[in-house]
Length: 399
Image (cartoon, rainbow, N blue to C red; front, side):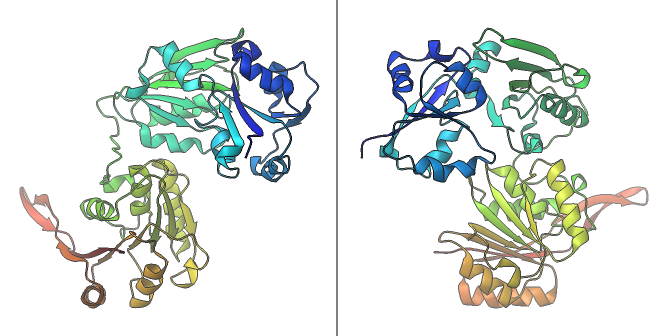
């Protein structure tokens, strides 16, 4: 099919920053869709002008209905890097679309900072929960963040300061490449700038000696989670998440999620990993939600109920963890829903649950292991080993 839809990245320099062929596409367009700023930057032709709706999905049907007309969609920077082009490309066939990239905000910000893009993390909190950047706060890390509003840098400064990274250097870059380009520099602990609503934030993370270390590999300290004591503990959690194998964009069902520790570590371990926690107790769901916000996994979804009723209609998972409510019935329902090559892990601490795992292992195979952890603790004036409850863990892959 002949392409009819052009998705054009544009910068603050407007038409002057575009190739002649791209300017010709805009001049010949019958319909131009974009934000108000995009329309202002490309004023001067007679095309029908449409503004982006809120939410964005509301326009997908309208865009598709324009097939056969000359349609231009204007976006900022690179249409396929944290931009609308990727979303549109999932709905409209590739051979119907031509993309016209422009320098992205990340590229411009890296140049302004003198940073190598290969050596930093690029994030967006534009239209997304700001808390998700918390998972990337690491000593000496460099972050480029597309922000969601004028107040966002101050929120991120607070996250850094609360975790012992108050000395981190922050730079807000606004209107890069345009006549109104502006730069604001400061430290997280004393950040007080008033900045434009659309900006890119550069952060150089600097840790104090007592800073909280929150690696993205599983095994966060138990004390970082709100819990009533029934959570999967640090060493067992690390082994559990390793068996679940977090992957980019993969979905976990955490059955009997309790404080949410396994689901949260799963989401932190891989970019865009998703998780649904299924938990019948409201107090534990409250703790899980608070933990998710504090530890950088704000998109953790929580569902009240028990398996199998609670999983009806959910998207098929790539991995399932059964940490509570273990039964043959819950296994059968989860196993039936699990996608091919999906991973299932179940932990048991009681004799009754262990018997269920032994029977399931006999029927389905997989790996059955015991995990024992002992911690050194004071015994009077001396030190001794205090064992935690032994955990029986069963894991398998759906082939």
